[in-house]
Image 1 (spheres, rainbow, N blue to C red):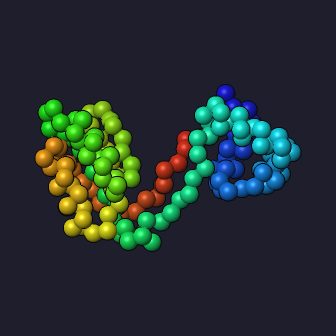
Image 2 (image 1 turned 90 degrees about the vertical axis):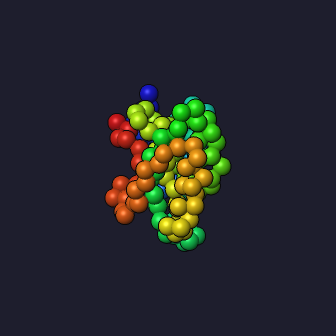
Length: 145
């Protein structure tokens, strides 16, 4: 389990992963070397696996985001997974239980590009697509307490 200081450090980094050791030390009440050691241990344990950069895909021309439910045709599960991995516009994908085997998120520049990318899957799977209008909640972690 994580103690209160670890949770404080993680919460601070979730808000801004670029915080300096000095800023994290002020927030947690520890010295900068102590914060550094705690972060190193959290990384070694796999609690913290990355410090990320979040960008807005629209600045790169990706005007549409789609969520696609994918149901592979019989015997095509592995091929569908290979196709998804090969298409860079798939930015997230979960293998799930239920009727659909995959739920994926795509970033595309146009409806035409979306159609073209999904055409690659049509030989191997049935798809059901929804266009994202707004994301009131971005991907976030559950409460840490």
